[in-house]
Image 1 (cartoon, helix red, strand yellow):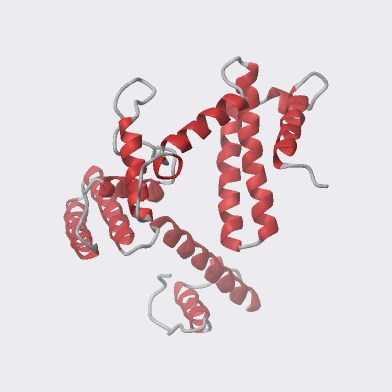
Image 2 (cartoon, rainbow, N blue to C red):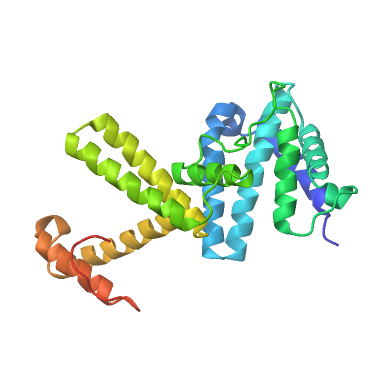
Length: 274
C-alpha cells in the first residue's frame, strides 16, 4: 500500500533535516535564506514552463522542486528558532478557513467573482505585519516581472472599482501615452522618455487585462516566436555558408519574411519587425 501524503511529507522533512545536519551535504549546510532566493524564483519559473508545455511528469517534477524550496526555507527558519513547518502549515490552514466563510462558516456567495471579492474584503480587514490596515494593493511583490506586477496591481485596483468601464477607454489612454512619448522623444528629454515609456507600457498592460489576456504571457510568447524565427534565419544563412553577421540587412529581412511566409496562416509583410 502506498504511503499517505502526510507520511511522505514527514519523510521529506526528515530528508531535509539530514541534509542540513551533521554529516549532511556540504552545499546544503552552507545555504542561507539569502543564498536560496534565486533558486526559489528559478524553480517557480521552471514550474510555469512545465505548465506551458503541458507534460504531466514535468509539471509534477517542477512543482516538487518548488515544494522543496519551501521545505528548505522552513528548515533554515527552524534552525534559527523562528518558526517550524508546523507553524507555517497552521497559519496557512487558519488563513484559508478564515477567508472562505462560505465554505467553512455561514457565509454565502453565488459565483467565483463574489468569492474573490469576499476574499479581498476579508484580507483588507486583516492587519498587516506592522499592525496597520492592509492596502487594497497589498500582496503584489515588487520582485515580480514588471508586466506581471503591473497587471496584478491593476486587477486589485479594479476589484474596488478603480477601473475603466471596458478596454476601449484603456486603449484611448494608450494612444494618449504614445503622443506624450512622441513629444518627449522629440524634445530629447531622456528622463521624460523613460517616464512616458513606462506610462505607455502600463497602459498597454491595462488594455491587455481588459481584453482578458495576460500581458506577461503575450510578451513571453512573442519573445519565443522571435527566437524561433531568428534561429531559422540563422539556419538559412548557414545554408549559404555565412553567418547572420556577414549578411546585409536586406538579406536578413528577406530571410525573415521567408520564415514568416512558411508559417501556417501567415502572410508575408514588409520590414524586419517580428
